[in-house]
Image (cartoon, rainbow, N blue to C red; front, side):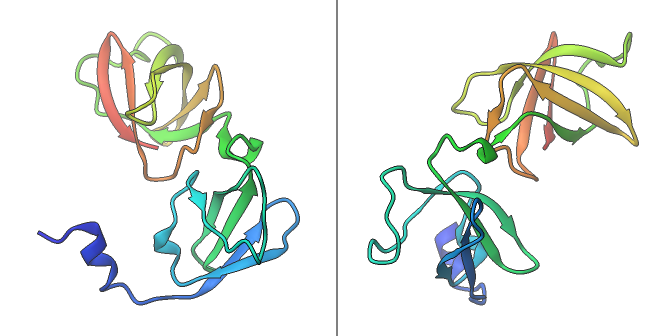
Length: 156
């Protein structure tokens, strides 16, 4: 079985820019967008730019191969106030069986505790999740866990 580090050597390097999300200024270059994860700290040479707060991946633009970074791990751009998931495969009856909106617990990262969220049906097999408190670094394709008496897992 190939480990992630072993697989990276088979991915063609594709250079791109690292830009500050607030100013749009180019602050670095990289050799592949696949090396970056939303919300993770980006190491930049101190002779290029310095910040006591550090820089963190705010978003990834796969078309232009641009990594957008923000200053500080608590920058507002890192927090989702709502997002959409596809309808989960519920283990038991859907908590939305009686209503188009309900309160559930939602966990986006296994190391974080579940947060109270409002779950609403929005059509096309999709649900909107509105957390009581914003969720840091909720990334497209990431799995989430929804709990409300019944349990289900679904990608964000």
